[in-house]
Every structure is written in structure tokens, then in C-alpha cells.
Length: 177
Image (spheres, rainbow, N blue to C red):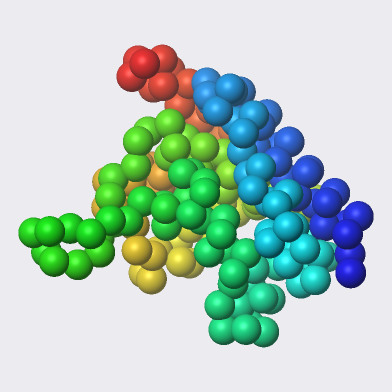
């Protein structure tokens, strides 16, 4: 098992998200980012299926078992994941995605940028988070407004860079406070 390497990867990721959250105006919220990754179900699964920091251990667990117990635990406790935001819609009589509060969309943006930086390492560019988002877009079960907002910020990141994008998001958060 790769206990130290997994711990180092998730902690580097978490600290990167925290820095991004402060830049985006939700610093206090960022301090609580992904604490569930240190719980036994998520942490030891991450150690067992460690992927050398190149992709999520949850993907390897899913390949092995057909599902990821660690991911099911994680998404149910972390509101910055769009998968958390589904509920039964009585009008449609089925489960449907719900629009996310903006502060969690901001944290999701910070999380995606940080994950790209960690997984891409020295090859990271500001286009990586958008590229990853677009590859999964056709199969994503996410509220349309939430998806559009996240995509808008990822496009801005690619075209205008990190400083301008975080400054824009921070102004938006202040305006909506």
C-alpha cells in the first residue's frame, strides 16, 4: 500500500484547493475542502488503488469492483461535487440535477483547477481543466445552469488566465454576498 504517497497527493491537492478558494473569495469554506478523504473508507481505498498521483484511485477501484465505495462516500459528503446535488423531482417523478449554490460552484472550479495541476504536474496549462470538463460533458448528469457557469469560468481560465479568472469570481462572490 502507498500510504505516504497517497497522503502526500491528497494533501497537496487539498492545499492547492485551499489557496484557490482564498483567491476566489471563499477562503473559510476552502479550509474544509475534502476532509472526508482522510476518513478510513476513502483514505485506505486511495492507498490500495493509488495511481502514482496521475489519476484518481476511485477510477481504479471502479475498474476492480464495478463501483467505487470511496466515491459514493465522498460525493455524499462534499457539496462542491455536482453529483451531491440531485433530488427527487415530484413534477418529473424522477431524480434530477439541482442548481448548485454559487459558493459550491466556486469550490468545484477551484477543485477542478487544482486536480488538473496535481495530475498534469509540470505539463499543466490553463486549458487542461476545460479540456477535461468538455470530454465528460455529454455524459454528465448536472444542472444546465450550473454546468454553463462552470464552463464559462473554465473558458475564461483558458483564455484570460488564472489571475483574471479568480479576480472575476471574487468580485462575483462579493456582489452576491
